[in-house]
Amino acid sequence: MALDYRKCAQEIVDHIGGRENVAQAAHCATRLRLVIKDNSKVDKDYLDNVDGVKGMFESNGQLQLIIGTGTVNKVYDEFLDITGMTAATKDDVKAAAAAKQPLWKQLLKPIGDVFVPILPAIVASGLMMGLVEALGKAVPGFSATPWYGFLDMVANTAFAYLPVIVAVSAARVFGGNIFLGAVVGLMMIHSGLLNAWNAGSPDAINSFFGIDTGVIPTWNLFGNIKIGNYTLASISRVGYQGHVIPVMIAVLFMSKLEKWLHEHVPEMIDLFVTPLTTVFCTALFTFIVIGPIFSGLENIVLQGAKVLVKNPVGACAMGAIYPWTVVMGLHHMYNVIEAGMLSSAEFNNLNIWMPIASAANFAQFGACLAVAIKTANGKTKAVALPSSLSAALGITEPAIFGINMRFFKPFIAGMIGGAAGAIFGALTGLGASSYGVTGIPGYLTINNPLVYTILLAISGGVAFVVTNVIWKEEVKPAPAAASASAAPAAAVPDKVIMSCDAGEILAPTAGKVVGRESIPDETFASGVLGDGVGIEPSDEYVYAPFDGTISTVAESKHAIGISGAGDMELLIHVGVDTVAMQGDGFTPYVKEGDEVKKGDKLLHFDRKKIAAAGHPDMVVVLLTNAEDMDNFTVSL
Image (cartoon, rainbow, N blue to C red; front, side, top):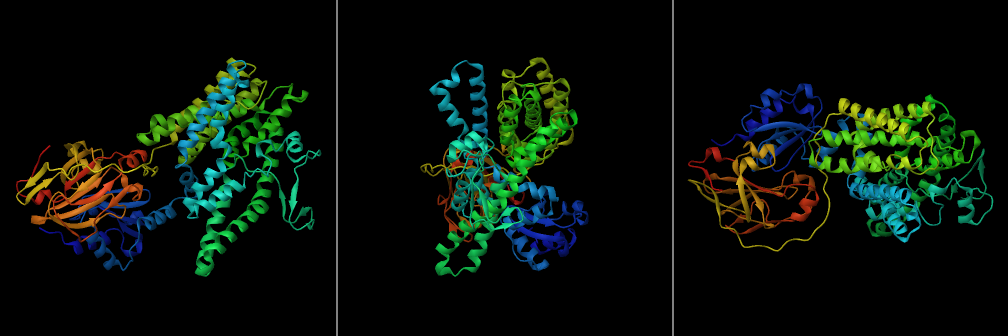
């Protein structure tokens, strides 16, 4: 019996709290996606038994009702008609769902969105930097060899130009032009500025600017016009190497300004007026507003750190706060404090800051390692394991930005572990004979290796345990990525994989056919969307498995529905979770309503791009109304 789409939609509306309880509604190839204002008004037990609803789950602030290909779009149309809502895209729904999240999640989400795509570069550089530094300390003379210089250059490239990478990614997240974003990032580390990592050294200042005052020169754009003690439009000529937050703020400003200009500048002059105005205004805002703010923060942090590290209470505070200074990009300035300690009798020529930094860094290692062990998500595990190793070697950016800050609770656990380890370090009088290394490489400079081992065990152990207690994994969509070229087409497959009284269904792509239960997705494998098979593809093309009509082409291009003889409704879904790729790597050759013949080419998919995005490329082929077909059989 055919589904009554109107009745299905009406029952859904009636049991989600009515129109007034829905913020946004959209659909994909198989699911109705709803953002609900008050979840307590949703009758989930009733919805689970609505005729036409094959399953239900909540993900990322969305209530998702599984209805099926070729059907969900018709139920969705009725849903819009009943509620009087207008159609929304999946991006609209995601934005509405994000707005429902707690404020702290909303504030942290952009950081995760910016850093997820650039994780491979950060993880690779972090690991190599730790290893190269360790080799330079462990092998006498190696740091003076050409090999060390070359490896050091390769290892630190991503961090030396981190603002550029962050700026490009941030522009994508905030909707700005990525090339203008790159200009902003490059501008903030321009060779005409002093490298921020050396900004505290008078020698570096004198050498770079040829001035013997040891004071960073400024550009006074409007002369010496003063407001109190502040010189109007005075720009300190120091770069933002290693910084994250100021770069993201600058690109956010750039993206908002660019969008506003596109909306208000006449089209005939938009091409040159908008980019020029955007870059110029962003440059002024960045160096006049953001610069002074973060310069002030740096001075406060540096002066306060000197006072705090002298006692256990202060050390505890700095052990907890240290990861936040990494997030803000202020941690490189601690080298000035460390250098001063090593040359001062006040600290007995020992760097007592190093144990605090080591405690903080190793705690982030412990938290990240706990995530790596506890997570069931293969992609998260693949990032967390090398990131934790990098943190153990003293390079924490991959762990902080890729895992701990992204999930936040592990980051808090790391702060707790860092505070515990820092107290121990202060009470035991630990110190180092050098600076610039923490974590495991710190054994090469520490004054008491045994006590240092205990400090690392406390820091990492506390963070590891606390993470396991307070963090519970939430399923999140995998990020899309990468690029690759299309594979050549193979011969049109002719293997029969399913049959019923209505007709035969051929394999839509070449490859190994497996049972439905072997599909690596619970929704498909359970049969809730219909019966069928999975195909491990050896080709990159999808062909029509019978004569029919295209009933749906997913907005993200990864799935196609076909209606055939005897009301057969077939879903061809390429890959698992490939909706997250947002169409990248998929090229459909048909549109909804097209008539197709057996063997017609329907879709090209790029297996290398799917693999690079971290998704299985299995092609799912399901007869969604198999239960209504007489004498239905599957052939493997």
